[in-house]
Length: 96
Length: 521
Image 1 (cartoon, chains in turn red, cyan):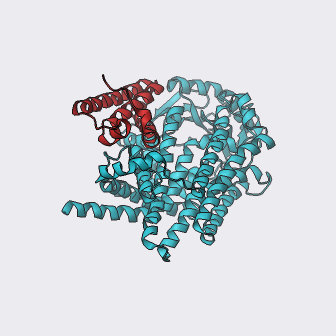
Image 2 (image 1 turned 90 degrees about the vertical axis):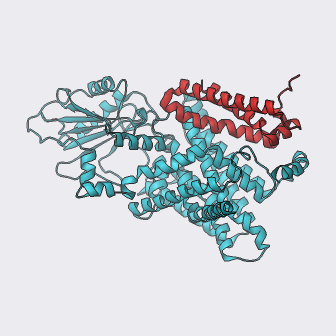
């Protein structure tokens, strides 16, 4: 469950980062379309919410909400590092 | 225009409060972070004694020892090993003597997992770092706590003003631009601060709360004649009964453990105090392990020492006590399960690195402006940065080496381990003032890395509890310690290497640079 929480956090932050013009450009060389941007923001936030639910599942509501904050930090840091050193790794396949 | 003025004033506030207390904050953050492994470090510091889960054998052993050495004592106190700790301590207080407070208790004896007394080296172990992070050393404890409180208050100021100063907290959320001097330091400082911001704010605020009665005693002093009276009322201790003078056997200690377990839903005691042992008026008080509750505070059961009947139970009950206890619990993370503990630790590392990058940024920002001119303030800050950011970890590693190398029969050995730490730090501070700064950085970081990496090597070759032995024994805590020392050492060596050979900007970064500049306007 903790691994799942971490994965959701990682996914959430990666998606949120890609919803930003600068990072989308670094990864895909283009700015995201408005709709795509909106979708990614929603998806990213949803993934972070799922990460909270998984944390609560793993640790219970009291420790889980504390642990989630740690999971958030631990998920965001790798996204930052990948965007810095290998932005292309974050590329997701374009929609047809 | 007005808004700009506000932000600039906050930037100034952030820079100067940060610098004023930065070095002590670094010490507090670093030692506090390390203290999340306090029990593990203590275990590592006392290789004589193995871990055990069998509390009953240990408790029985302690009772046997106390019955033989101090049958007529006013009270016995048995400290049982916590989940992550090893070894019990049995001690006693003679009739009419005050309770023992600080230093080495002459009556205390360590009890091993087999229930027999063992000789362990005189060491503070993880407690040395733990106490350093809020008591400091070599000055009266209360002064130390005031200094730490002062710095913590400014940390809170720095956090708030830092968030206001940060121009693009969301736009730069994932931004790190390496190889760009001052810009990179700012990015790193921002990323370390923002990504763990909830932790930084929590740990700083709850840190003040742990010592709130010291810093803000007015609510207590307005309602009580003295602070002592307030403490006595807020945590009433069961008054030890007068001994009856009639001998009676003590209730079986195993039964006490079982009663505690039923009352606390499987919980275990950390300390058992027995007043009037061997007397008909014996009274047993069991205190619950702090690792079992988020809310810090006294959770206790008082038992009749002869029949084992429960006299009373207590736990923090008023909302004020629970709020404070919850915050203290959150700060110290004694409750924390292992994975959660790692998150606490990593956030603490981020906080330490945030303070360090902040300190370094102060010099990196001014170096360009000075263009090689001499400047006393700059010189002082630069050297103090080296001696603290790189020198303090080396001093702490020196403590661990002293734990291994000082002769076991040295008088006040435990104090000497701390003296070695202090002297190493002092030496590193002086060293930073006499060497060219870049050389000093490389040498101190490299030395720290080497000292850390060589510790597991020493343990493997010279002790019976090296990495391989602990792996074979399945002792996770000690395996973690050895791997942790190796990992930290490697990190310091990499830092030393990076200072020695600054990396040229890479192709992708060079290609991206104009775009980034454009994106930032």
